[in-house]
Image (cartoon, rainbow, N blue to C red; front, side):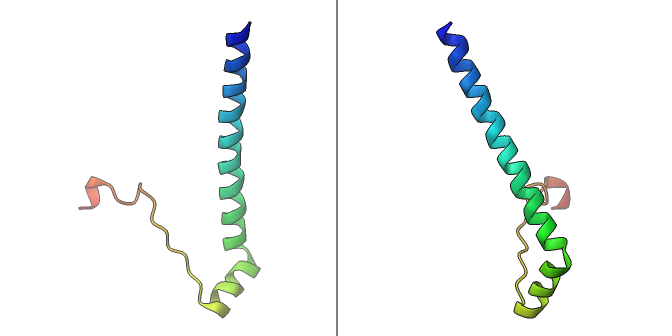
Length: 61
């Protein structure tokens, strides 16, 4: 009984963390691709070019 309760809590926490990252990425990407985001980038010359670890693979060397 107690082991399944702890397992359920762990699965909920993992699910919420994954959901957080999905929503965070979607909102950030949506703002950057929106008209307002593009205007702000041009006006304030703010460009975030964060490289993903997938961009730095062994094939590109």
